[in-house]
Image 1: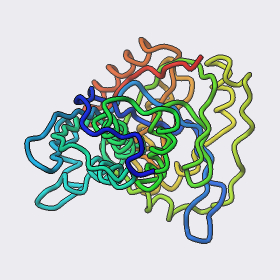
Image 2: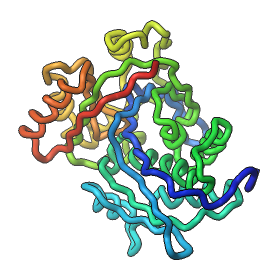
Image 3: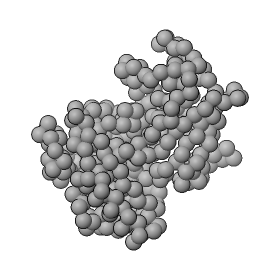
Image 4: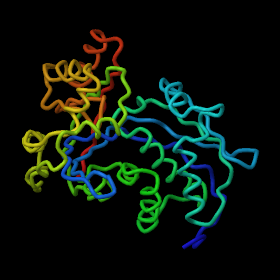
Length: 314
């Protein structure tokens, strides 16, 4: 539906938070003939992440400025004389314009990079999803409707397996190659403590080290399992992250992070997220998580550590 119902040139949209995506559980259940792995995962999103903002640009092209504690790492990861040139944010805007057959107004974008790069919490995917939403708002002057969000999800699939789930940044069960996303109708609020030993981990290398790719699927998730934080933790204790063992083989310091999180007072569950190296611990409340964040930061000044709420879904 190129250009359908689109009026270019709305007001500059408000900044968007690209929330950290956390794999509370991740089961690798198979691999297709084309090499893509089949997954089952429960994902949740922290109230913390990168921030993407935009202003109208004077020129004819989009411009992207990287700021924040991990701007340098992202620039190095992208490479080239124009390190932001191949950033997923700009690729998302280009894909959006192609899909709707309408040129976006030129934007001067700023990505405040607060999440570590290549760390298993979907930073790049969350940035791309935020760019799709921000670009649509810049193009139309409004947020996307439900049907338009479905169209954005189709575009998101072309940018990466994790991008569709980051569009809404709501707790969900994810299956297939990561693009089959089923939002959860309810989810208990709690807090999460994220910790990374300062090591990037390449996802393809982690998958390459998998010893088994036909692992058992997730246990069925019922409304009762989502009725309270205690019930959610009890269900999660039956699950696992199948990428944890190969990631530990590639980056042994992950084991130190897991050990520290598991003995932290108030921790209900500690595990690695995605393909690593970021690990997480679940807490009943944000005060406990923030207290342990301060304590761990004092003990491990080289680690990236962040506590954040995880919002409830009623």
